[in-house]
Image (cartoon, rainbow, N blue to C red; front, top):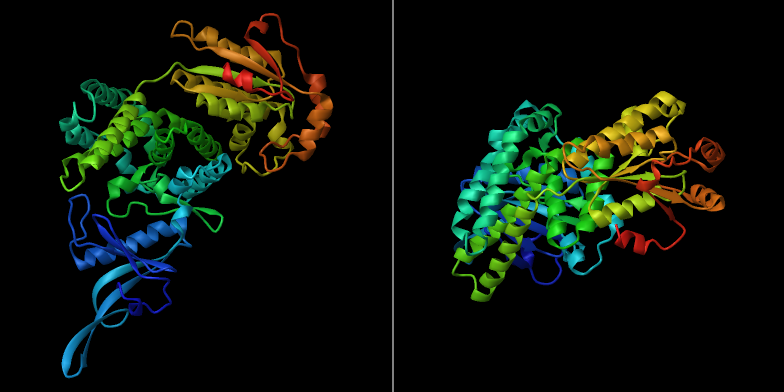
Length: 510
């Protein structure tokens, strides 16, 4: 397969062979051929030809969900008997003959298209993270589930691999991780499973345990033909892919955080949550964030035992593993929750500023427009009819917005409640969360009142495209009439900002 003549199509340059511990990968220019090695690691078994055929078939089935343009077909590698100059010889070919191996054929794309390489080049944008959030949300929505798959969301199965991680890394205490971090991370896991049994049961009952990707980090995502592609998902082990959708989300968020771009992880997370409406999944997200960081630490730690790895690479691996162990521990340290209420007329910049605040504080951005449409059972980008904007529906929307914000803030999240909040009663309802939480611990609430001149509001609404909000400029007069000024009791909570001005200092001082 290193010979250009082997292939029934033109190749570009010499054939390049790459190897992992489980596969051979041959790069031909237009296509990639991947062959599984006959190995058995327990969690992965490719030891027989039939198993390699099966897992090639599974790999193409699973990856065509997120990268159908990249994964093409499974081809048999066959042997043909022949003779030349009176000598019997064997010739290998793709296709006819006695099958001796199987190859997965894929489109070869430039390595610069990998998000990991784009990140290294400094070319990843927030808009791409928005697209990725939308793509992953669609991917999960179309992924299979069943009673069998759901059973993998039960606590004994969820914690099995997590407990294995701790057992397998105990020997790295004092080498790549501290005894304190190991102990406190493990104690967090034990407490979490003991106290969140109902949350895991709700995830099972809600059908959030699905046939997911299982390895969703930047090295397994690319932008090819101007589209986000999710590839190289887990095909060899059911417990690694029959997981909570938050397991996948956590992998991507953790990877961006480990690369010191929490802001981009926040964009991805908030986009995903808004698309799916699965804000309830945030309750279990911390355990998965810690798990994903810890497993990266574990895998990196294994390099420390491999004497075939050069000494300088082992030193680097020790540092990298330590960083991941520390990040896994940091995810166990839940911060103080808080609520920021965005208030103002349509077009006043609430959502734009709310997004900036979320990225700055790693907050959860809850938009009333999204909550209203999820309650109404319509798509986020579908325009709502009159029934979506009745007084009853508006009351339900604000009740859900404030209730959800309270729940998430009590879990330790910074929450941005993004709605007009034009009535004193609505603002009082949000502000009262701080007063009601006094006995259980402080839950700070702030109101950010966004303002801009009427002509600017009108202009913004006339030019707004690609947003889920339905409000138009002709509603502004009625909104101004309905607006209720702040009571003196509200004023201590309120910061008014002119969104036509540079808000850098405001954001820096949050």
